[in-house]
Image (cartoon, rainbow, N blue to C red; front, side):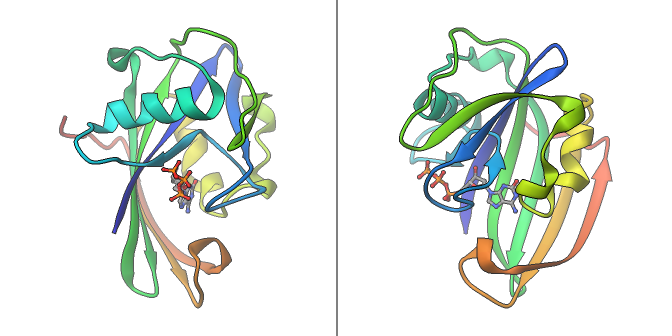
Length: 161
Ligand SMILES: Nc1[nH]c(=O)nc2c1ncn2[C@H]1C[C@H](O)[C@@H](COP(=O)(O)OP(=O)(O)OP(=O)(O)O)O1
């Protein structure tokens, strides 16, 4: 089971997305994020991934927990993804080998170029709500080649720190 984070940096009416250049979901848009490393907290992971992928600095206390998403593949938990949202950052986004950053109006988030599940939960996160959900993928590996078949989603979730 992979534990990972995703972070959505919101500035006014815009959100910072990346076009992912390698790894899972390559070629698709998402928030910056990636796998939890040994010994780090979820917040440290989210801040590190934003720094590594697009060069912005985010104070740990400015990261709001916004979602806990479980992705299953053929009935087994594949990834648990902790979603963060913040409006506080330092620096300007820069492109890296991993990610091409882009400020996108929240009204125009390109859901047709993202994971199929994103259209279900990301609008709530961008509105400042919290979500908890399970999303089922079937019929293939890796996860980004599998078919999205079912989900269960709740808004207004609360999380343990
Ligand atoms: N169904 C899904 N919907 C979504 O929006 N993001 C998903 C997703 N399934 C996985 N992710 C995200 C979560 C996490 O940020 C990232 C994990 O992908 P990877 O394991 O390929 O990570 P990376 O290669 O970016 O990790 P690092 O090597 O740790 O940077 O993909």
